[in-house]
Image (cartoon, rainbow, N blue to C red; front, side):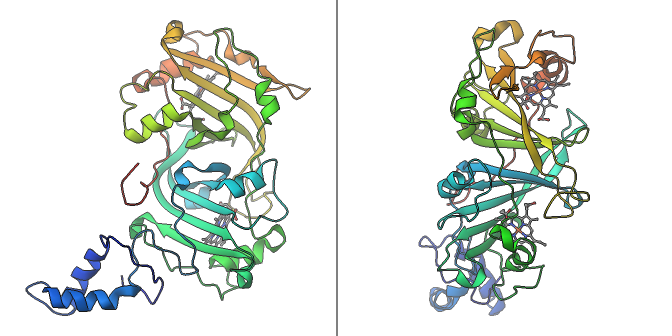
Length: 373
Ligand code: HEC
Ligand code: HEC
């Protein structure tokens, strides 16, 4: 665990030093544990120990609060059995609105959140996130990281307790595609070193054009700014789906209070994108990646006692018509509890015991200090 000068930052509260201290004591052959002089000596020596949330070897900070950042893209890596979502800070998200920026502005931070994947036990055709494994981070600073194309790289993995990993973060390996900079440099130098094609969502005006549903459900204008709950991939048609929740939903999920029921006022948006073919045929940058294409439909659930006819949940789907306005999709109606082809029918017949919700939201690490929501 002792790194070769990967990081010079020391955590002020020192909580994370303890395991390293114990290890040092063991290495020094102490049988009785360390006395306080030993500890002082050791503390003087361990400025190089890597602690959770430390800066990466290239000087990129742990992206505190990334759990709440805006979703920019998503991919599935079938051969790695990984689901990934790319989120960005405000600077990056604004630059990505409407598509790929020619060059990302200084201060942009992109976080590639990686989960192992799992088949949804309630839907054999649906693959979603399982365990959180890593975040890979790129931060744009054209002067600071001029030697590496204007980007700094960092990598924190759950298996290393969210200490920054030195693995792969070698700024001098411009041609080595096993390193961060090397692979991004060799494969996408003409795209400002960024692979992700940002998702193109409907515009605010299009969202505002969505008609109110017969049961009174309104598509909230801020829906595209909601926080990430999950991501799903459909085997059947290779669709990628992003699931966002309003504050009531996300806060309840993080607090662990969605069992047995999600709170009234929960709103969930399942945003469906067409598939681009798996990369073996034509995905532009990578040979093993499924990534989303055009926006198709926004499927919506809202929980409230005013929807008693359908077990306290409203179901509506909106899509774009030929004129680019949001229309209600026919499949939203009628609601029939016995018909698998209707929203209510399928959700009721399959996941009543999960309060009609299929999604198993992606797990994320707590914010520093560890394990806070
Ligand atoms: C062998 C090639 C390869 C290596 C090595 C690699 N990446 Fe990537 N990276 C990709 C691909 C492909 C994507 C596209 C999205 C996805 O599937 O993750 C990506 C996406 C990203 C993103 C989201 C922005 C973007 O470019 O799309 C970040 C951030 C990122 N990588 C950081 C890193 C870091 C940090 C490392 C080193 C620890 C690293 N990458 C190593 C290929 C690579
Ligand atoms: C044949 C079954 C089926 C039908 C019909 C169906 N869904 Fe779903 N729905 C699913 C599955 C499976 C998921 C899990 C995630 C995914 O694949 O996106 C899901 C997820 C959702 C989610 C995210 C929250 C959750 O429950 O996971 C919403 C919102 C949603 N559906 C709304 C709708 C609406 C609105 C309709 C009708 C237009 C509809 N669904 C029709 C199976 C169905």
